[in-house]
Length: 101
Image (cartoon, rainbow, N blue to C red):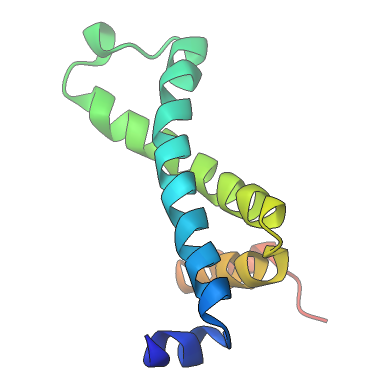
């Protein structure tokens, strides 16, 4: 845990616990929310067959990104999760979304 705390720039065990809780809630919530989103978009397993799982995962990904920052904010960790998102998206080649000053 010491290495993780150092890597993330965290000093307290409470903050680390909160961050783990946010990750858990966000993962579950994004999977849960993706079902009604698919239905709203008209994406049903009967129409897409084996592609349905891939399409649902593609829907979950952006939902997860948004929910991570929102839920992190609710738990008072906006700064950590906003920096986490920027770093992750930059590593995926989407750094152009964030203008450096």
